[in-house]
Image 1 (cartoon, rainbow, N blue to C red):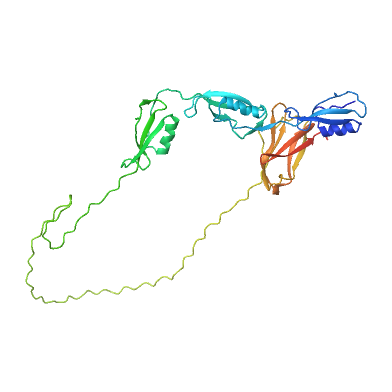
Image 2: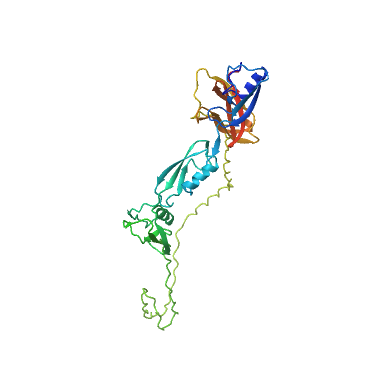
Length: 375
């Protein structure tokens, strides 16, 4: 009598039936989100049937949930996005949302979720945002004067306006690089697609000092006096009195007691203060944290240990371990950064029956670990 085979590990079932003289043949491997990778999906004989020794039982084995990379849909049309999906085998589902956009023309995809390059399960929904073009509604022009040019350009693009000429000139009231005038004045009603010209400040104009021509001493020639400088009036000649004989009588100087000279302080050379040596703290080894997508636990679950003894040839790696549940659910068992110093690294898991865990190193599938919780 044949035992239960569906949703059981292919290797284990093959071993049990081989002991009964029955051969289990893997006929095909297919993706299946409900059956864990390596488990039997269906067989040519059912549980409880009686077969003769030497019978061959053909089975289909699950490859687990298919994980695909999200392609880029932005800047494409809906028809082009559907062709991209078809080339991937229709493993993703497109969901459209339409909204106006000032940059992208009508019918062009301007955003998507999940983003290009994200890895998701086959059958996941990808939302694409399709532009309906500009909404030709009047709006009041905001003021750009005094704003840095780069910020003003961002606002102009967001409003759907076209940038015309940008000239530069000196300004004493605005710093260099600031907008000093705009052709569509502030609070004026305008529409997307109109052209706006800007003037940008070069800062204050440089000032020049007036040149002054020196007048030669004793010259009576007319000289040109620069504006703003008062004209010099010649002073009348001063008569020099005849010298008279002066008798010098010395005045005795007052006595000033000597002030003792202080002894010089000994020279102490300055010792340079050494620069502080930066302290490099060791990076702590990651510890498994509670994950938001753990499989539901049951009272009869058994705890086992998964041991990682390599990092797929790397000195360190970002490790991600997942388990495929029922439906489209993918449970995160562990996610963290490990180095060779952390090995061997033990991770507790709970469950019942046989479970297969997918181990990714730096985003690449590295190994599959099968745990039999019944042993």
